[in-house]
Length: 147
Image (tube, rainbow, N blue to C red; front, side):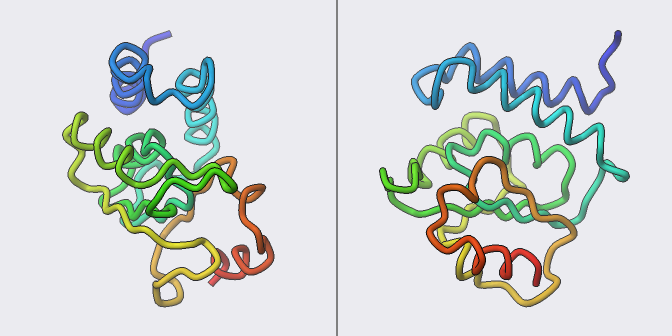
């Protein structure tokens, strides 16, 4: 089955990371699993294009790269420095990956999901994958997401 142009763009990110970024792969088959996961989410979205997207817990910036293909602007958040307790790799890895991929519509912003520095209703979509289990106060983070 032929890929749509959007699916091809997302595949190109996956392929680049598989070939060139193995040192940052979080665990074996991380790139493949998150690629397939993102395609399944994309299939479920009623619209395929968003103005502004907030990503909570961007990690190495891999899924932010995917989100950049369906958004005018992505604000990707995570903890600024590496934090073993929450599995945060620090924002430098995400910046480096976005630079390698020539992605310019992702703003990296270090902050906690428990205290987001945005006005209510600032985003069209909030995206987070495998992050809530690492947040100390999940209820507070969910309240932040909702607003």
